[in-house]
Length: 114
Image (cartoon, rainbow, N blue to C red; front, side):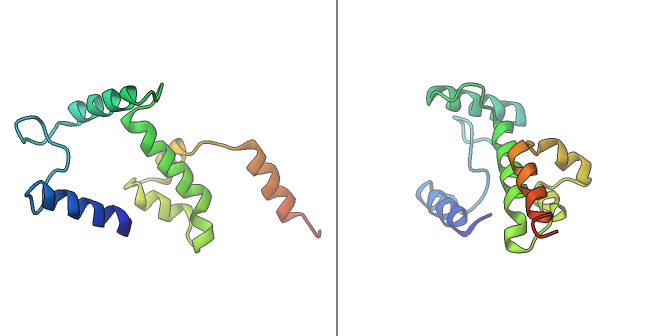
């Protein structure tokens, strides 16, 4: 997690009177199942007008953005795979949205001076 997110979650847990545990809980304070959490995100996104958004679309966006930027910090797609907690790079590739313009630019960059 980023330092900003870690700090924000630490403050959130302190305000809620918890030292650790599940961040999103049911009305009774219990952890949410994966299905319940998915529905929670769907309601949350709908309330703010994000059409077609889901709990999984945020994951897809993160992985795509990570794949586009990882080389800027000296990383590789294997690092993105590890961030996504996938055991196979082919699984990670399913999450990455293609960008035709980016493909043209990288080919131009590679062959610029040849």
